[in-house]
Every structure is written in C-alpha cells, then in structure tokens.
Length: 638
Image 1 (cartoon, rainbow, N blue to C red):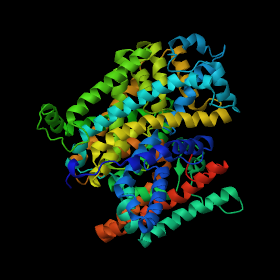
Image 2: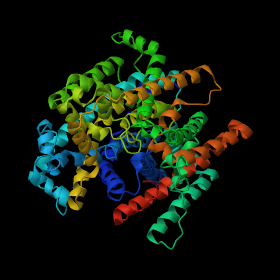
Image 3: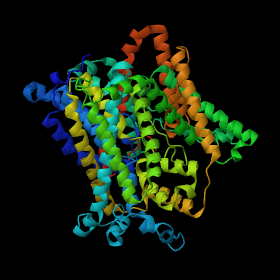
C-alpha cells in the first residue's frame, strides 16, 4: 500500500473536538471504575475497552446519521482518529500513571512521623516545586468531605501538576520521535502485523456493516456478552447464579512442599483474552503458557533443592528487564543499516521521508532536544547526570521493547510487574546494580518521585502512538496531521486525569493509595545500606543473553517454536492472568489451521472478535452503570 501524505485526509476539527470534550468524562470514568470501585480495569489491557465502547456507540450514531443526514456521518478516518487520540488520552488516567503520582505528591509530608523519621531522612532532598507540602491543602484529600474547588487548594497543587504535565509531554514527545524513526523499518520492511488494531479497523470499515453482518460475530458476542450480563446480575442479585470465569488459585491443591512453591497460579476463562489470543502468532501464545509452566517448575525445583533461600530467587523481575533490553539490542542491530542510512541522509534535501509524520531530521533533532530537556528537568530537581542518563537508557529501552512486542505480537496484556515488586522500575534496578551508597541519597529520593510511571507499564502510551501511525497508513489519514493532536491530547489528558483524581478524592478521602510503595522503599534504601546485588546482575545478564539466543534461533530456523517474548512475560502478572485463555486460543487456532487451512482461520475471525466485543460492550455498560450508581460491578479481574 502506498504511503503518500499528499493524497491523504487531515485530522478533522470535528474528530479532535469530540476527543477533547470526552477527555474529562473519560478520565473520571477510568478513575472511578479502576480505583474507587476497583472493579474493571480498562487501562491494564492492550486494547482499551472504554475506547472500543465509545467507538461502538459512535458507529451506532453513524448508522442513524447515514440514513437521515448522510453528509454529517463520520468517516472511517474520523472514527479511527478518535480511537487513536482517546487511546493515548486514556493512558494518563490509568493504574500506573496519575493513580500513582497524585497520592505521591503529598505523601512524604502527610505520613512523616517521629517513628519513621522521614523528615530527618529525606525531606531535605524533596523538591518543593514537584511535591505538595501544604498541610492545609492536603487535609481535605486525606479526610474527605471537602472540595478541590478552593483557590488556596488549587494554588497549592497547580505548580506541581503543571511541572509534571510538562515532563509527561516531553516523555511522549521523545517516544513519538523514536516511533517515527523506527516506523518504516518495522512496518514496511519487516511487515509487522499490529494485531491490536485489527478489531477497531474491522469495526469501522464500511461503517461496520461487513463485520456486524456476520453471524459468527454475534454468536461470539452472545457467549461473552451473556456471561458478562449474568455475572453483573449476580452481583446485584446474588440469587442469580454466577458463571465463573475469574481466577481460581491452583496453589490450594498443592499444600505440601515442594509443590506449594508454585505460588499464586491463576486459572481464568476470560472471553476477551481468548478472542485476542486468536490474533496472536502461534509461537507467542505457545511460548507464553509453555514458559509460564517452566517458571513454575523452576520454583518447585528451587524449593526442593534449597534455592529458595537465595534472596530474589527466581529473579523474575531481572529476567523481564534483561529480556526487554535484549529485544531492543536485537531489533536495533537488525535495523543497523536502515538507521545508518537515515543518519547519512538526515540533512539531505532528497532524503526519503516525505511520507513520514515528520522529517527524520526533525525527529532526530526533536528527540535529542526532548532528551536534553528531560535531563535538565531531573538535574534541576537534584539528580546527578549519570543517574539520569542510566535511568532513561533503561526506561526508553523498556519502552521500545514494549512497543515492538505490541506491534509484532499484540498480547492482550503487557505487564512487567511481578508479584511483590515493580519489576522493571529503573530506580530499583539502579540500586541493585550500583548500591545505595554509589547512587546517593538525593538521587534515590528523586528516583522515588519517578516511580509513578515505572510501577508497571500496562498503560504505556508509546505502543498506542505507533499503532496510531499504522492506522493512519492503512486508512489514508495524513499522519503529519496527527502529531499536534497527539501532543495536545497528551497534555490535556494529564490535566483532566489530575482533575478527576482530586475531584473524586477530596470528596472521598484517601489513606495513601499506591504512594506507600515507593516511600517505604526509599526509607529502607536510606536507612539500610545496600551493596550491588551480584546475583540480580547475573540474572539480568543471563536473561539478556538467553533472549538474544532465542531471537537468533527464530531468525535461523523456521521450525523453532520458542518466542523470546513468551519467556520475558512468563513470570509476570499478565501471563499469570491469561495463560489459560492463551492455551485455549492457541489450541483452537492450531486445530483450525492444521485441518482447515487459512480459510478456516479467516472464517473463524468474526467469532473471536465477537468474544472480545461481547465482554467489552456488555461489561463496559455494567461499568458505566456502576459508575453512575456507585456500584463496584466486577467483570474483569483484580
């Protein structure tokens, strides 16, 4: 497919205005359903159900408009523009973004006591312009029955919110520049499939007429939607029997050592995960559940031979980090000629970048300038240059790896969080690699303030950016017209997310939120000196090398069944939730392709799309009702 920006349609003002109007409502809905009710969790998924539900409603409106006012009907480009921008705008409101930073800003001052000695230990290192030390302004947040709509309270919060919003926009700007550099290589040269965008593309094609006219879609929709409907009714009316699709913990069946070492082992039957798993390449879905059980075998073996006494065993978080960095090195090395060619021609007026969202020269200079500003931001807060550089190497390395994984393979969830610790938090890894004394007290304190976008990476914005550029390429949207709306939505979504959080919790009151995690860890770092953890460093190195080995074997041998992403994700929260749905979809896809060929696979696509839509639409409606009537209707997972 050609990619000529001059022949494409720009982002319409109508589509942008719809997104901007809906952003505050979207932020409020996400925080209510994810945090207040802790019932459904759209931003923990690769495909955001809140966005799919909104697009589904717009398609319904479109069917009405196409009959009575056809010239006002939304085009596919407009619907997908709304999808792209709203997906990016949803990330800041998620579990691993504003829901972490908002309670962190005043936590160190609110919960300092003579016993924990926080005032003496690290208050002097906290930048006052990035935190909230005004106790009067904080009172309402923690006690509730108050309001944010007070001039003094707004003034107390405003500077910190604006500074962190600028930081967030800079992060997304650098991500976008990186995506633009890699886009052509991954999309047009390597032909990555972008599984996550398949459903919104199909939904909006021909106004959804082709997809929604398929009987198999409605069969899948009825199964998944029926389960969600019954389970929602069960929550309201317990006499209605529940259809169990949520987790059972299999460890209860293995009470004796060493078998009890398998730990938390979930058995789930989420319809949406089965549906999304069908679009994943077979080697990935196989590798996810295979390596998941290899990890369980390692834990049992470790218990039997006494390895569990080793601190950190089996080093799942280090394996996730080492594997992520291994993927970045592998894909960068594979693209070395492509990247060198770009660098050689970056100042050439005839360079082949006229069809890109921005010129490569702009992307390189803009990305470099963004990085300098990010480093200056941390330097002004008190961070040493070398710490900031290593931090961003880790962070953007992880970001590139996650974006590549989503573009190539599209897992239903991408989480690098391991039970009990933030797996790939660069601040935590800096301590394990260099020790607390080498990093220093000021650096440790500032790294703690960066915990908010590193607790986990489930709602990472960078994959949504690249998927948006691919949607533009496939549907004749002028990608250069997406750049400003993406950055505008990034900044405004930060402000609406903070607003929604403070609006809600000045009424309800909080007890600390997620903030206890980083500050308790900081207290431990500053009171108990920690040396470099050579076992953790070794495990990271082993994972890095083993990932490169798996990548090499995949490139050399077509029959090689093990995908490195399955190895990286196997020990994380994500695969713990969905290994069984992935096994089911893998089995179904394997049998269909083996005995029916590609035709049977394609014929079944609407059924599995229906499984996704059924749970998303019916579950999403329950979520809206739960938000309106303040009922925590749980239809996903916790």
